[in-house]
Image (cartoon, rainbow, N blue to C red):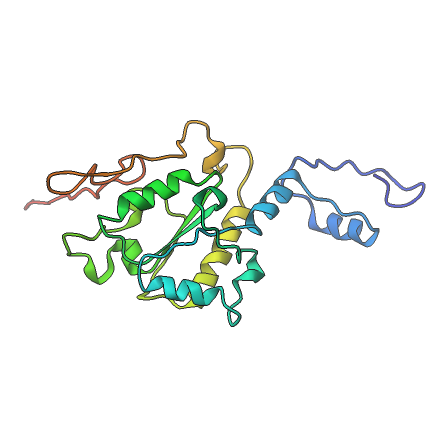
Length: 224
């Protein structure tokens, strides 16, 4: 690639993620735009997030407001809320997840194609919120499906959801196609579907997905 007629040739490794920014700016002034396959791939993914069109409780009202004209979620390429999980790649768990609804949420997640992402919106989706001690409320959707972004609040405002979108976009943009830090959907050993919990005699069975969540261990210390 020559900068000018008779100028020196520059060898650029397009497969390498990090390209010198000064060199890129110099090339762009010459009308030559250089990128890597990873940057192009991640750019396409982060700017075409299609959320699944469903909500569980009051947080869904804030999610709906985020897509309206005042906050304009369309700026992030995510205005297309899909009615089918087979056409969506982002699940926004907006609201309280009851144990009666948990199997349906996991089933919807399993039907979404890879790569797919999950945003847990609000205290109820993260930990059960004010209903945490209730017998019928799941204490966090991350017990059954992997969550990429958590949004605290009860309910979080649309600005918080926009910040979560930008955080998810940054996370996608920094992912590598190869190596140990490559995204989950590029690791053949990791599953894209998880067991759907069933109703047992006293609780959901299994009570959590042991592949992605383990209860914290309690260490009780005695007198030394």
